[in-house]
Image (tube, rainbow, N blue to C red; front, top):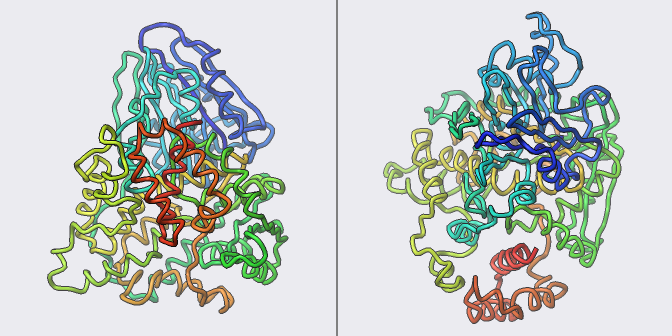
Length: 586
């Protein structure tokens, strides 16, 4: 896991190494083990390295054997041993044992079409000196971020927006539609970022950038709206078990010890069950609790599982002040507002695990793949109704502020009347695009493409990398994703049960006490904190700062906070406001 930066000048001027160095310095946390630069003519590439595979000879930027291509790469290619063996047979003269060189070998022998053979999480930039083009490539499900902008005669890219801002602060004009989307959905979705001039490379896509300024995009992978396979639950269970075993096995590849984030819930426990069978080293597991008696504390479940699978278990209990002390540090490093308060435990856990390992496996993605949220029950109902097409445009996604409440909250100069913001139009498009697969599947696909990518995966990447920790996500192995996505929604969600298929697989592997537990989100008691430990902070940062009137109707905001203090539950809304204000000030 690493961080990448780079520039391509569009006006014929030479790229400046000091510009790339300035960008690279802002993301040192992504790769504390080393750094490297390549500057030649109009192109400049930078790299920060967290050494995981081929510790001695895997440094970057790395050049292809014929000298034509130069690469900076963030991520892991899990099928690189198989790819390397095949490429050796085809005559590629490997100089290292790294997964990085496999990308260069594929490009030298097969061109960009070879990238389709990559299995893993990745974001990379490849400069082709002969063809004078820069390729930016992002993995299929968006596990690794990659941002870009065109500014001041430069095409500029990086793993984090802060690197772009460091060298080109003129990109910092805030996008009003993105602000509205954030206060609608708690994250900023699609290609958009909080800054008008900064965009994201789409998951499963690559950009081809030329020195004259031409940019073309190609979508090399996307789930298709196919009619579900007609197979039995037993057959699906068998195939899912095999694919999960293969996914976890490949995600254990590393030249350093690997750990597992363990909450004690179904998803992380299932990952651990496969990892414990296949790891050649003794696994280390990590869990975090918020005080010994907190109702959200699940560390005793995790401890029982760790004992069951014989792991070296690490457990930490933190207090409210210890968690909240991290908040300014987290906000300073977030590229844009994200109102998912699970960023707090994710960072605490990542920082704790990074004291012992460089790599952890995480259970993210299972809810969006197998159907783990209560709202999917409604879609299971629609799939069983003869007039269910009537509901095709209904999107019961979680929202922070409904349009009418958002209008009351935001300054009139900030508010956008049309509730269908560009990103929300994309949500609707995704859902309708996948409608032939059924209502449950269309909602799952929509969440995989939006909520998962721009909230959950962003949280995992930013908080893990802030702690210099690589988090791997076996549930998003693309072979597994493609298979589960092809199945009938009835194998995933019914009117009464969620994650039907995953539960059937897990039932044969996990202790009954874990398998029968109700779903419990990875969260913190923010509502109580806003009435206690966070109250003074909210009043100081939000209510007592007159500059916030540029964004909010302060009277409405004060009323909302007063209602929460009296017992109404506005925790998500108030947390979204607090995060936004802290982010703006930082």
